[in-house]
Image 1 (cartoon, rainbow, N blue to C red):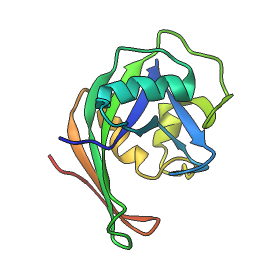
Image 2: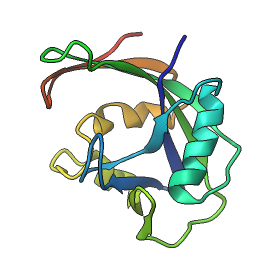
Image 3: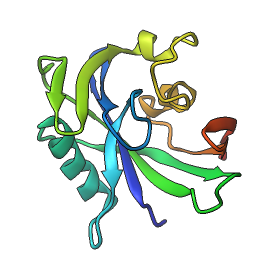
Image 4: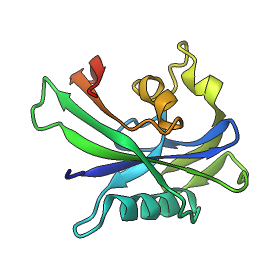
Length: 155
């Protein structure tokens, strides 16, 4: 399968390292690390590179945990396919920490999954519970502009 992006979750005990981006997709909301796969780069290679670029962490214990696709009813060109990975950190780096693309912080999974939490990417609580269980799924979101109108696990 051809992927255009990666989404990475770094975990330490019951916390996950998230980034609050200063620009681009999900600006101002907490989300996983990741980015665009460069020409000639593998999805795993991108996950390793993006993790180091966005957090300074050099990890190589990534586990593929599914894929995430999206489409936008208002903009048919706004669609894509993301390879999702997680890795465990050996220690908890001090946060909050301002890095190149935003602020990094360790967030407790209970906080991430709380249905009243409006500070995270809105699709995150729908699929992150499966990702750390070694369940590989294909997730799909449908948007109408910036509003998510549907979420499915395709397999």
